[in-house]
Image 1 (cartoon, helix red, strand yellow):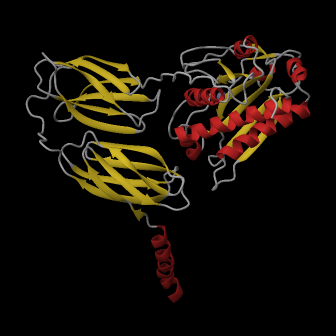
Image 2: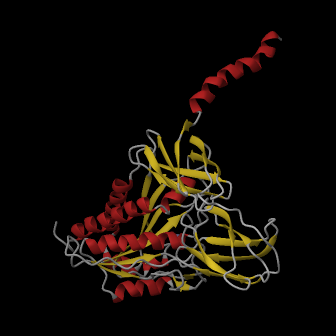
Image 3: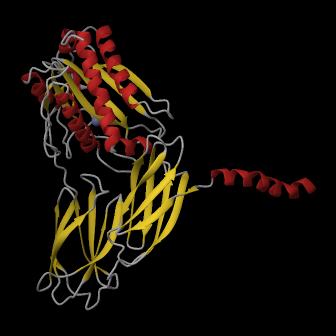
Length: 438
Ligand SMILES: [Zn+2]
């Protein structure tokens, strides 16, 4: 009995040291004009997620520090009235808070709260996508100002807007933390906060111009990069492959980020562009099967683009998903029994090339804290591999279903690592096959 009564206290005593050990460290925060700078040391951490809240805006972003010293600045454009800014630095799954802090941001110099009539009938709300966010326009005759509230998965802000003339409102909303092709919702609110109109648009994606092709170790090698899928696909029935029986519509679905909600098609396109530039810098000639989200090519058409370009190698870029939300890492799929695959290489050679690719990726990307698996799989399951007349791999670059990898696959530093790893893989395969000499 006595022990039974004591037990809860004993358990509590056990918990106290643990909760202390797990307590988040303090982030050093310094208010600046329209921003707060942060600085914190978190040894053994590299990529983390920073979230901030201020009275009229909040957001989250991936932060990276190779040496565990995290510092940077959070833009606070909509906090002119001042207020408390809170910051937490979390693991990617949001389950562990590693650091936190708060600071008072003073009101901006000369700040004046909006005043006048802030209501009326809103008509013609239109949003146009831009590369930095959205452009809005609407009309609300007789109003002196209104409030706009914009939000995406990554950030949210509310701010007053003023008519240019005669109740006509127009302007741009910049959403730097919002991913390309992410959905942005804009609400027009009265001064008291009631919704008057609402519209949605996606942030635009604009493919970067290619870097200049250099003379380099891959000069003479032609690479076809095939970023998988497109924004809106439709299933097409295709024969499985030359020398194989049957046809398939394949799986028309694609992976989606567990937390970013991004479509696989935009993630692989962004990485594809980085791979293009990396290969161009090393001397390769590069052909892309697509450079925008708004296209449609069947698998066979993609293989034809590679064949028409006389490509030595075709890399089909994809990202994966699993029911297990802890899975990390790559897979490389090569074709096996199609007539075209057999003409390219025997299975042992294909496997050896796949190993070269996956090892190059693991070496470049290898993060110290996780065991990243890497598989080479030879199979007939991918139509787009079976119809390739040249060396061809479908590369699953990571798991969008795993929170950490979902964020990393959209983070430019990590995307560049993947691109460099695959470019190294192309070089290693080119040497192995004798397309270039070492
Ligand atoms: Zn895919």
